[in-house]
Each structure stands twice: as C-alpha cells, then as structure tokens.
Length: 127
View: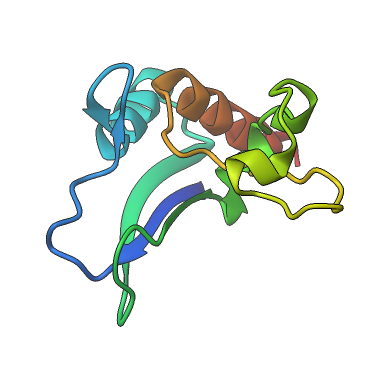
C-alpha cells in the first residue's frame, strides 16, 4: 500500500497551538484523518505526523504533503497583480526592485487542504 505523509514541521515551542483550519476550527490532523476515512481507499493511506525543529523558536513552521509544500499543490495567485501597492509598501520589496509578494499560506482553509490532499492522492495513484 502506498502512503502519503502530511508533515507539519514546527519550532520547539510548547506555546505553539496545533495547526488549525481557520474556516472550520478543525485541526489539520482531524481533517487528514477525516479525508482518509471518507476516501476509504485501499490503494493509498494518508497519515499525519509532526516534526519538532530543535533550536527553532517562534512561528517557524511548514506543511508538506508527500514531500511537497502545500503551495506547490495549490498555488496562491500572485498578489502583486491584485494588491495595487508597490511591494515596498507592504514590506516585501525594496525601492527599484521588481514586485515580489509572498506566496505562502499564512493560514490553511480546510477546502485548500482537502484540494491539496486530493491532488497528492491523484498524483500518487496515477503515477
């Protein structure tokens, strides 16, 4: 049986709460378990794991699915095309540089997580 690993890597800080989807207030772990149970596929198992990054502090964290960053499975649109500000105004660029806005998820809606899981599952099954 193939396995897809959802890995949450985060700083070694006991004050960091579990990773939660802001739209449903469910933890990523709960969503992954629910997705796996709903799919009930014998071809692939989806599991959730946490990795503590020793020596890291603060909000250093990342979520990968089958080794890929979430943003690679479900890319964010380029905000520099829509925000109407020079990126120096929002702190992501310097005067005279080309716009380069951040394209990582600050929060992960459950629908985005489920879409990413579906894409990873399809990739894994079809090859």
